Image 1: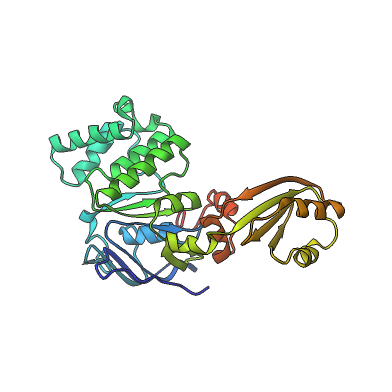
Image 2 (image 1 turned 120 degrees about the vertical axis):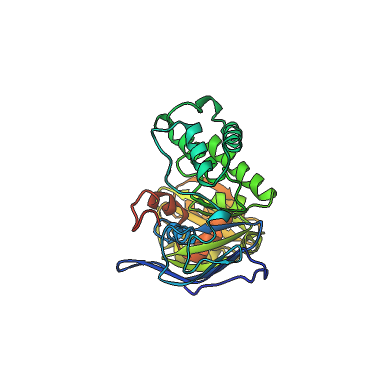
Length: 334
């Protein structure tokens, strides 16, 4: 699949050209190029092993690129990956905080690393503990935090110094619905104040909800970059009906398009997907299937979304992304 890039403004805050990174014989990131505009939320969407975390690690100086160029905030970071460290905040996919320190102590320690004075870092730490609903756990050791609490404190540590550029790797993975909603609200709030956000995710709904522009990345290559609104444009106005079946009789994949030429059909195990520019009338379809001995257990209308675009462009079923997230990748969750 050829890489497709979208034109962006001249004053890009992150500018990457030809980035390539291998781990031994495994090519994790394959000659990708993209730009991020100031103040936008830009997303990398793809399955485990696609190259998402590797890209963030290279951009934030945690891994060295093999070839290509990187500019962050107008600073050339190609040969000096730490050159723009003062401009960025990082929220990794796994916590990098200290289990023996309390939540409050962890935040103060991170603030000290950025040169914040004691009074300033304590005030900022308390503020963030309150923002993330962790004030009651400020004096508890990080090791005793729940997974969701650890995720939120890790996020707080990444923004303690109020960076103008924020890198988020799978920001809501493994946390409960309420915490995920809170994190998304905080991300949107940061962007409204001018923060540039680069995030990776395998949650299609999250990318659609948060990102102004999205890059689909598969097997280390970017296969599509566009504004979210432009990605959704081709599916707007489509009518989709999902029929769940217990059995399939006859050669439905050949018969149904002949009897219903105004519709498009996709057949998978236990499911028939019907697409049309017109409203799909359920009754004729049900009669047709009943006459052929096909038992339909459910018929539901489906609102077209970014998931449909992602599946169409990449050929990857969205459900597989969540399963693959649990598999180990080369060099961590790529």
